[in-house]
Image (cartoon, rainbow, N blue to C red; front, side):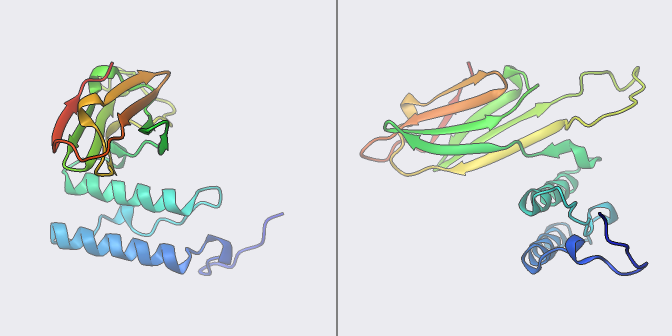
Length: 186
């Protein structure tokens, strides 16, 4: 059962928590510091839907602002696929959900201790000929980075794309390895 609302008063369950509100303010200040202008109106304080995770909501707001800084024209042009990182059997593993992203549109690089996975998912239709009735698919560029421990063996690193999941495996060693490497995706 829904609670009746009074015009001009935000129900308590839809108000952002103080932590989320502070994070949004910090992102807005960062955007203004980088661009010298206020965040676009469409990115300002969108309420957190009750079914959404507050962290994911703030991340989407940040990605929209980053897209604006990079000169993107739409909020959907930057997205952040979910990832998992774990250690098992003397390996560091990173898995990232990239369904619909072709192998040749994914780049895996390591610079210093930072693993970066980037790429682009495109719409399955031609914008010049299609009349889209409903679109819930997220398309555009993505970029996710993970700090690596100093003892990874980059020379034995591999990446494999299977069933829409990219898995990067890096063996762990007793000592640090070289600072940069690009890994082909098989």
